[in-house]
Amino acid sequence: MLVRIVYLAICFLFVPVALAKDLNILVTINPIYSLITNITKNSGNTELLIRGNSSPHDYQLKPSDIKKIKNADIIFMIDGDFEVFLAKYLAKNTIKAKVIKIIEFPNLVTLPARNIKVLNVVEDGHDDDQDHHHDHKAHEHCSHNVDMHIWASPLNAQIMVHEAASILSEYNPDRKNYYQKNAQSTIEKLRVLDKEIAKILDKKIQQKPFIVFHDGYQYFEQQYHLNNVGVVAGNNFVYGPKTMKRLRENIEEYNIKCIFAEPQFSDYLMQKVAKTTGTKLGYIDIEWGTFGEPVASEDLYFFMMKRDAENIRACLS
Image 1 (tube, rainbow, N blue to C red):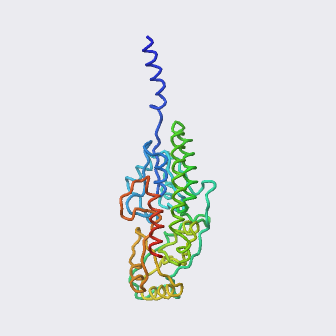
Image 2 (cartoon, rainbow, N blue to C red; image 1 turned 135 degrees about the horizontal axis):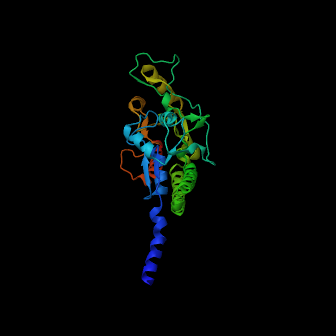
Image 3 (tube, rainbow, N blue to C red; image 1 turned 135 degrees about the vertical axis):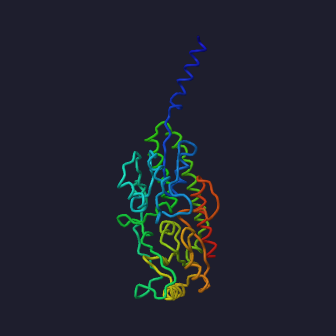
């Protein structure tokens, strides 16, 4: 009888764990997915919406994506003005998931969308004899004049992890201690990352001018005091003789030694500019981050940020 009582007591002790409901969590973009998986680890079902070397700028939902959206309990996104494709779907469809807009997290450091110099602008607004055209309107991401690339700062990433863990704990209180412990560990890793990047991007690197393909690095540049003097991609930009001439003039004017392309966009123009001007070509990526290498989801954010810092240093050295 005593053995039976002890057995039943043990069973009841573990019932809450057995009955604990794991959340179906959906995250839109890879850097945020990486941070969330550091919190959830092996608990629950955490999925990434935009897979492959795709960009939220021009993403098209597939039937498999819609299934994930419908099955989700929580969806983490930056904002409806960033993942426009998802905002359009949510405006027309009713789902069970709680949609979390990360841009609304308290205590985030947000920066206004800036009007950084577009270096390919030509006087008449078009380029005759153009050899390539690209509609870049979708690459602008601002809500109420806020730059949406908030995760590009490891300091913001720490706040995101803290707030996301609190939200997950609210919706799954049985996992609260687990989420909080993982979040604290992740925040410590982010503090170490911040120090590593600051060491890589020392004062000698900070002084050197460079240009990027599109303006997605303001948070990274400000945190580490980098000298970005312009971008190539503006609205409806075209590649042609006038564009190339204007780019060459700007590169000479600003004494630019390095230009940065991005893996998720064609490097057609950047290759041409580098070849014709003798400028070094580097690669940075704030949205996908693998640089063609397989990286575990939990490691991706840290890999991406450190690799960007290393690539910037290598190109500017």
